[in-house]
Length: 314
Image 1 (cartoon, rainbow, N blue to C red):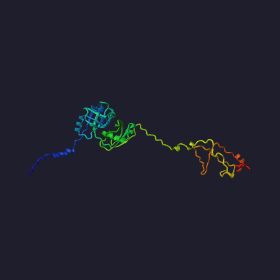
Image 2 (image 1 turned 180 degrees about the vertical axis):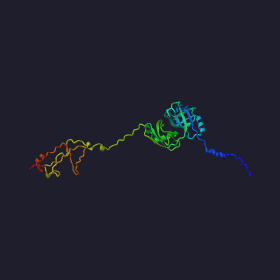
Image 3 (image 1 turned 135 degrees about the vertical axis):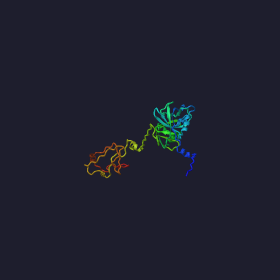
Image 4 (image 1 turned 90 degrees about the horizontal axis):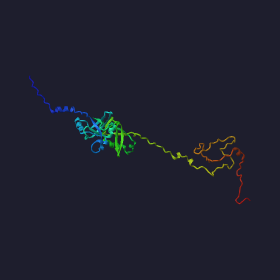
């Protein structure tokens, strides 16, 4: 039997649609060399918004080329100074520069050791979103700000990315503060556009911890005995004391041969460690106690004095 020949199949638009979607157009890198100048050299009015942030101004031809290359957004670039091998990253603010020129903030030119008119190589890059950054102020005056973390957060809105090792400039109250980017995570260069990032500060360069002097109590600093005046003139209870019944004191020894232990002389400001509870001691100065030999020769008689009458003796 003869078979009927098959009719050729006509390719439809739906058949090619699947193949085109399988291989989307890949972004091609942007790699161009420009002459760089500071923002102060930009014709027209003064652009403080460029000087305060981390974005640059590029020529209009760069925008046309970037559009054809189908690069990823946001537009981030890697700047390279081939003379010194210094690199940094930045964003773009406007495309209004003269052809063949780019205008950079002054702090960015200092980081890359660039002079006016030097060549800088620009390459489009895609950076990870930042999660952590650590800064170190280069002057202790940064601590004079009431809330430095809030001030830095507000100033970083003008930045598109951060690079470890860069020294950025932050302006607050008509004063410029420089901060060194010590660390960034998850990489050495991060994107900070629409991100939730933790910020930490290192002690500023030249900062010294204040010395805290502990204030001691006044009672411990000044001895109360030093505040007492020196005895002068009449001194109460200076004489010797005797019992009315003529008996010796209980603390005296029965035998005269035994000698009482001598106590050290009283020194002001030093407590008497031999003090006995329940006793009263009157310290006498310039008093010479009688010797034992003279005390033995005296025959003590109670009430041996003479009596007198107010009317006179009869």
